[in-house]
Image 1 (cartoon, rainbow, N blue to C red):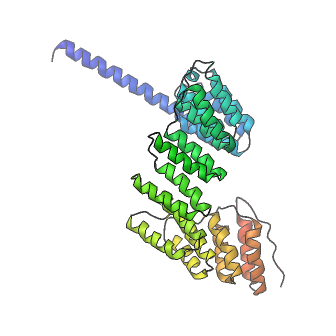
Image 2: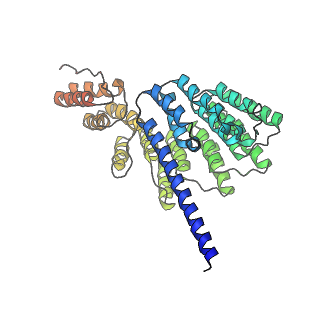
Length: 385
């Protein structure tokens, strides 16, 4: 190896090592910022730390910390803090990039602040930032997430024509979700026809969105026609697709057919989740079949799934109505031992039923379990006997 070659390799290696070291240092700084924001309990200081962290170029590329922070502030209904964080971003050169604007639009959307999202979109022209289908889709999504469903179609048609933007699959799926949320299911199906005429191939999101709307609204036959259309488009159903069908069958009180769907899911290797179990439990509750409803609840404990609020809200009143106080007591112990937020109205009838059967010790146990909850303590009344 010549001296020149050795010198070149040595120089290149040193530069690469230095670059790696700088990169690792910057990543460590960003992680430190993120951890500080995550651990901070004061929301006011969260905003201050976030604004300070935003001065770092690399921090501003981290989508997840933006989403988590804004979601946290919105959940606390601190919308002025959401505005403070997002408006603070406008001072940076990143605002000349469409992707960064699209992120801010989406963040406002997830906070239910559509007017603010629209303002960011409109200001892109002032910054000479391109408005393509990327930011257009972000605005549509913000409209849906803000539950401005009646405005979505006008935005979809009018703005795309005004700006000369050709809607893509994401655009159509977003509008379809709005139609389904509004209960305009015929419009959603028509949108599917329009997509296909334009040469856009519907995907699993498209079909699952429509299936949810149709099955949940009692339009089971229309759901089945859409299911067949999905197969014709070579789109393979997933667990969510099957869950929507199970719910549709539950609402129709067709649990024998639901059993066939269960077998089909097994043969396709599609696992159950809590939505699957809830649909089956609801179906057997609708059919007034206590033993099978109990059976499917017991199946949950054999899996990694955990019952959710809907599980207990479906089962407990039904079990009380059927007079199975012992099982109702077990269900209440399960829910009170969990971190699930439930209301007194769900548990109090079980206390009353226990008292009627002179099971006052069991009633006292539920009251004590309620008091021991860290997240909340229910105002339960111990009945006298």
